[in-house]
Length: 110
Image 1: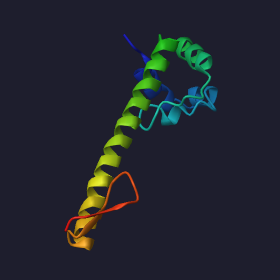
Image 2: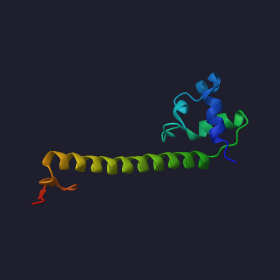
Image 3: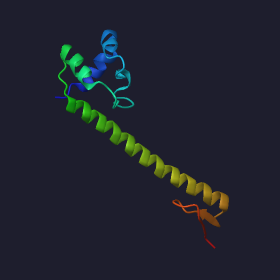
Image 4: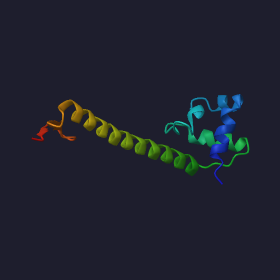
């Protein structure tokens, strides 16, 4: 079983553990992201001293999951933005001319 989520919760609520992990951004883990530039060995050592069994693969998996969610959200935001821009263009140009999504050229719809 992966103890990383439980350890993150424990570390966030335990000031002495937070101080041991200073510079590892543990307060941000899980909610916004899992930082890529942490001292994984330090995190694992501190977790083990407090009875949590985590491995480097647990940290890598959390980082990959965070990046996957970030990437997916960015793609979805881009799609929504393009749809919104199209609606604005249709309203502004009253269906006479729109900007093609992937170039600066205009396409006349007459």
